[in-house]
Amino acid sequence: MKVRIDTEVCTGHGRCYTLAPEVFDSDERGHGFVISEELSDDLRDKALIGVQNCPEQAISIVDE
Image 1 (tube, rainbow, N blue to C red):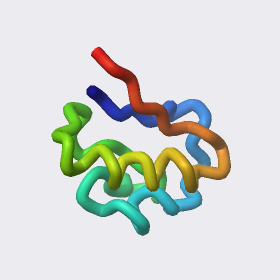
Image 2 (tube, helix red, strand yellow):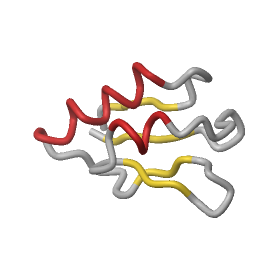
Image 3 (cartoon, one colour):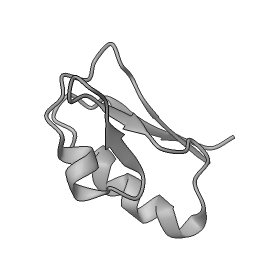
Protein backbone atom coordinates (compact mmCIF):
# COMPACT_ATOMS: atom_id res chain seq x y z
CA MET A 1 0.00 0.00 0.00
CA LYS A 2 1.35 3.43 -0.98
CA VAL A 3 0.30 7.01 -0.41
CA ARG A 4 0.90 9.74 -2.97
CA ILE A 5 0.37 13.48 -3.31
CA ASP A 6 -0.33 14.91 -6.75
CA THR A 7 2.03 17.89 -6.76
CA GLU A 8 0.18 19.42 -9.70
CA VAL A 9 -2.99 19.63 -7.60
CA CYS A 10 -1.63 20.42 -4.10
CA THR A 11 -1.86 24.13 -3.23
CA GLY A 12 -0.35 23.92 0.25
CA HIS A 13 -3.25 24.16 2.69
CA GLY A 14 -1.15 22.05 5.06
CA ARG A 15 -3.91 19.92 6.51
CA CYS A 16 -2.14 16.66 5.69
CA TYR A 17 1.08 17.40 7.54
CA THR A 18 -0.73 19.17 10.37
CA LEU A 19 -3.11 16.26 11.01
CA ALA A 20 -0.78 13.35 10.15
CA PRO A 21 2.86 14.41 10.66
CA GLU A 22 3.90 10.74 10.86
CA VAL A 23 3.10 10.39 7.15
CA PHE A 24 3.37 13.89 5.63
CA ASP A 25 5.72 16.87 5.84
CA SER A 26 5.99 20.23 4.07
CA ASP A 27 8.48 21.51 1.54
CA GLU A 28 9.99 25.01 1.41
CA ARG A 29 6.82 26.35 -0.27
CA GLY A 30 4.48 24.83 2.32
CA HIS A 31 3.24 22.11 -0.01
CA GLY A 32 2.85 18.64 1.39
CA PHE A 33 4.99 15.67 0.55
CA VAL A 34 4.98 12.05 1.68
CA ILE A 35 7.72 11.09 4.12
CA SER A 36 7.64 7.45 2.96
CA GLU A 37 5.36 6.19 0.17
CA GLU A 38 5.24 2.68 1.63
CA LEU A 39 2.59 2.49 4.35
CA SER A 40 2.71 0.13 7.27
CA ASP A 41 -0.64 -0.97 8.66
CA ASP A 42 -0.35 1.37 11.64
CA LEU A 43 0.23 4.40 9.38
CA ARG A 44 -2.65 3.63 7.01
CA ASP A 45 -5.20 5.25 9.33
CA LYS A 46 -3.01 8.35 9.62
CA ALA A 47 -2.68 8.56 5.83
CA LEU A 48 -6.46 8.29 5.50
CA ILE A 49 -6.80 11.38 7.68
CA GLY A 50 -4.74 13.27 5.11
CA VAL A 51 -6.81 11.90 2.24
CA GLN A 52 -10.09 12.83 3.91
CA ASN A 53 -8.98 16.36 4.83
CA CYS A 54 -7.28 17.48 1.61
CA PRO A 55 -9.47 20.22 0.07
CA GLU A 56 -7.98 19.59 -3.40
CA GLN A 57 -8.25 15.79 -3.15
CA ALA A 58 -4.58 15.64 -4.11
CA ILE A 59 -3.77 12.66 -1.87
CA SER A 60 -4.44 9.05 -2.79
CA ILE A 61 -3.74 5.64 -1.35
CA VAL A 62 -3.14 2.81 -3.80
CA ASP A 63 -2.80 -0.92 -3.24
CA GLU A 64 0.22 -2.32 -5.02
